[in-house]
Image (cartoon, rainbow, N blue to C red; front, side, top):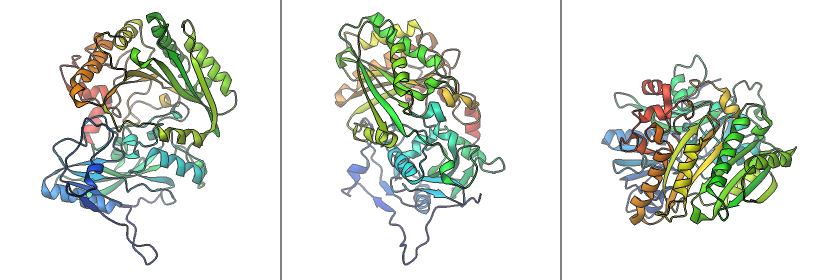
Length: 493
């Protein structure tokens, strides 16, 4: 297919040039809203926020930052857990929210998605327009720009792989050694001289290589010219479920049994093509003051959905001495996606997150550490948790070095989180989560070192503690925890 260089639209009498760029400074009333984002621990104070609507405007913004010697950063949805965008040294912030178009590009034979689009809008437009989707995350307000660059996973990934497994091309505004700024399109075609730049965006992290302005998606092996056959088709309906086990009456044995059962179920259903791969679930183990533990998820497709859910819950509840409360609803697929739109996406909270990949269920020693920190008497905060997300399936059919996402044989992705609202409590809550994570992986220097049981961490949930020798005493670099052997190639790119 042809490889266009930029996304600029020519002005005609019927199609005026797009607005912008708008350059917002601290004295502009829009500024306060533009520097407020998903983690209230960090609020940026850039000299300028550039609101862009075309690739050319991004080139202009980056060129001005380079010319003036000021550090730029880029934001899509604003959900980064660390201060990569809001660091005090960032003086020029490029806001991509105006780059939100979703369309089919006949020249590329792929779907073009602006890097400022949110997942919810991408799902809606792809599905209503062509009946297709990409297997991304369940939070509809997350921006495509960072989600895809980190690898991207969600409820349909056990059936269809990661989002980047369907990434055909990427448009990136880059800067060369001489300070020249230009837009480059890189595809996965074997003869593309920029193919390594495409590969770097299949899990190398957002903002590391340039400013992404567009992604193109087409599944590998997809043929023909009908757009409806070029990406996965979601199920017509999904059986959504929420199941809650109350803390009242739960012993340590019950909690560790529940988590252990979840791990064993993930091991049994992680094979590609397993009937259990239609079930996606997240088990959140909460602090005792929160009142209980919650399982959420969905079964893809209406056929045998309740039987698969019954089997899943029976496996998790085996030997657990507390009866859960179960809610379920069969919904059209798009309605199930929209349901998450009204949920709190974290923008009112101060947050700290950590992550890990697990190749097996959690062993008893780790489950004991989990229980200890969920029940510590010296810490009364309810909003701390660890989530065990089902993984594997189609994800694990891709070789480790085929994409920048190196973790391709895990069965669980773990997500550690604490949320609070008072800055005066920062040290207390950060300390709890850091100690929690350190103790779970105490036999490996406090981090999930790639090996028989663990496989590092996820750059989509970044954690600067992995680069801090106080919390990472493993002797294994943060870069290895995130990228394993792929790091050297990312450096070359």
